[in-house]
Image 1 (tube, rainbow, N blue to C red):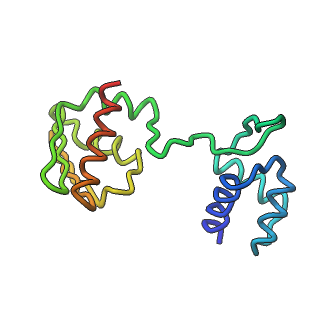
Image 2: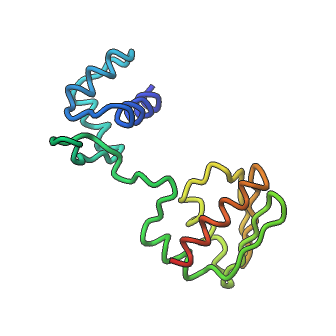
Length: 150
């Protein structure tokens, strides 16, 4: 139930300019979630929502990290320090790393939460990732490449 409620909150703040916890409570209750202001307050903290300016004044709730492929500073350093090269073979993406860094680099890439990646295997200096399609492999390749080259 909590997972569905959190997903509903994300949906609501993406579709409406919600500026108070009371409004969020009302919308959740109207959607069939029986919540109190205290529950919504905890959910806001868990989702790391923040308030941003609305067009025309006032503030609304928004996700603190809106990028789907967000990397923390720690993982960004690991990815950039460990990465050597990358290539695709159909729907397979192979990443070469500094010796001993494959698992750490794989964890950094996993933290980017690519929906296209079905799974990955890391050895000592090589990561193999299976992607859903050949096109997905190219998309993820380009995204990782852009992060490494920034």
